[in-house]
Image (cartoon, rainbow, N blue to C red; front, side, top):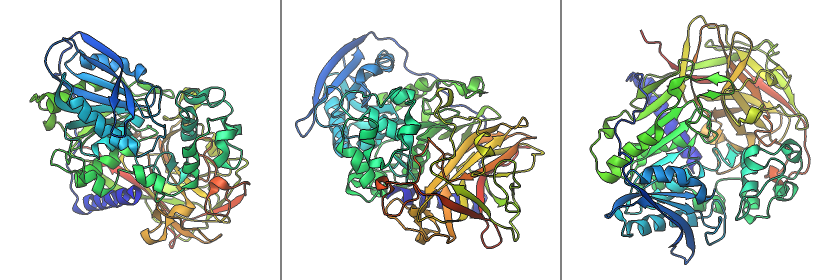
Length: 609
C-alpha cells in the first residue's frame, strides 16, 4: 500500500542525494504568476443542472461560462461542501475564458446516490464528469481540475482513471493515503477527522455538538473521552453512518473498504497521464499528500508531462494563502502570493495552448520561515540538503523543559534511559485549536513543562541553522502496555522561552514493521511485548522550512499523547483499540546509549557564502 511505497521512495531519494553530494542550490524566488488571461468576458450562470453517471445517478452541477459564442476549455471541481459556496472563484476564472463546472459530490445536497466519503464511485464519477463536460457544445475538449482539501482527493481519484479529455490538475492541500494522514495518521485517528465525519455524516451539513465542525465543538474533549470510539456516532450525536463504523472496524489499509478507493500505488500513478501543480503549507493538516504525490509522479507518472510535477509550499495552515500572520507570527509581505494567477497561467498553457514559459519555471517553490523568503529549487527534497543526525542525551531526567535532556550531533555514550508515565485519563495537551487555529507555529512551552513530556534542547545556537525538508526519527523505546503511541515534535525555542511548534511525527506501536527496521506499516499489525525495547522509524508527516536564528535552540519533544489533536490510545489489548472499553496507564522508556542511539535526522541547508 501507499505508506510503504512512499517511505521507500523517500528513503532512497534521501540516501541517493546524501551519497552523491549533488548540490543544485536553491535560489530566492517566489512562484511568479506573470501574465495570464485577462478578465474580458461577462459570465453566464447555469445553476442546478444535472450530469448523468454511468450507474444512472445524476449529480447536481453549477456552470459558469463566458457570455460569448465558441468553445472554451473547462475546469471541474467536485465538492462535498456545497457547490453554491464555490461561485466566486468560478466567476473569476469564467471571466478569463474558462467554463467552470462545480459539482456536489454523490449523495451530498441535491446530488443523487448515497454519500460515503470513500466509496469507489467517486473515481468513476470523476471520469464520467470530465468526459460529459468535454462533449458539451461550450467546451473545446480540454478539461482541467482544481480544488482544495477533499476536492484534491477527487482530482487524484479522477486522474487515476485516465479520462481522455483531462489535460491538467491542480490539487490544493490534497490529503494522501488514509492511514498516513487522515482519517488515520500512522495508525492514530485524528480528532479533527472525527469532527469532519460528524459534520458530513448526512446529505446536509450536520452540527456535531456546540460549535460544530469548523468552530470545533466546545465539548470535544469531554466527548472524546468516552469509549468505545466506534460509538462516536451516538456519543457525538452524529447521523448514523455505516462508513464511520468501517473506519473503526477496518483499522489497516488492507481492508476492502480502503483498498477500493486507494489511488496511491505505483500501478495507479502509472495511469495518471497529466501534469500536476500542487500546493500546501508547512502547517497544513493534510501536508503529506503534496510531497508524497510529487515524488511518486516523478517516478511512476504515465507520461513525460506527468513525470514533471510541480509543488508550492508556503507558511500556511490548511486554508492556504489567506493570512500572513499565524498564531502571532508574522511571515511578511511575501507570505501571500497571486496563487489564482499562477493557476491561471498553468491552465493557460495546458488548456489553451499558450506558450507562456510556465514549463521553464523551477518545479519546486518553498517558503523559508525565519528568513521569510521564497526559495525556488529543482527538486524535493532540496538537492543541497545535508541530512544530519541529532542525538538525544540526558542523565535519565529529561522530563519537562526543566530536565537535563539535550540534543547534539555527537552520538550517545553509556547513558541511562528516560522514563515517563502515560496516563490516558490525563493526556498531554496539544494546545491545538487555540484562538481559532487548528495548526500553526503556536507556543507549546506549557505542555513541555509536564513530567509526561521528554524534552531535548540543543545549546543556544551561535549561528543561524536552516532546516528545509523531510524529517525522520529513530527511537528505541519500550512500554509496559500491549500497545501505545509515540509522538515526537520539533520546536524553535525563542530567547524569551517560547517554543514555537514546527512539525511532528507519530506512530502507533502496533503498526511498527519489524521487517522494515521499525518503519510504519499501514497494511498489517505487529503487536509488541511489554517492556521490550523496539526500534521505531518515524517519518515526520509534517516537515519544516525554518531558519533557527542565532540565540535560539532546536527542541525535540517526546510524549505518548497530544490531545485533543489525536484520539488517545487506551493502551488496551486486542487488535482494534476502537473497540476498547477502558483506559490503562503505561510506563514508557526512551533509550539513548551506544546500542540504542535514538536520534532525529534533520534537513540542514548549508549556509550560503
